[in-house]
Length: 54
Ligand SMILES: [Zn+2]
Image 1: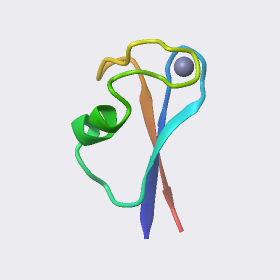
Image 2: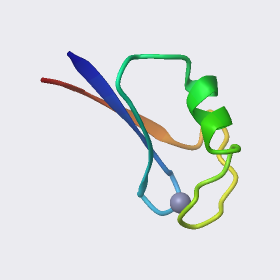
Image 3: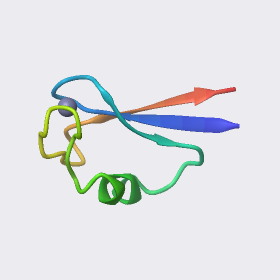
């Protein structure tokens, strides 16, 4: 199974974990387009999605 972590580009925190590969926009919507840790607004080019395979 694939899982993906959305990582804040500012502080490096894992903002959102996706069990399935969904649209990144769905992940951003779940966090109100903000990093809950540092409060930075997240733009699609501003964070990284780390995909890991189990
Ligand atoms: Zn952050």
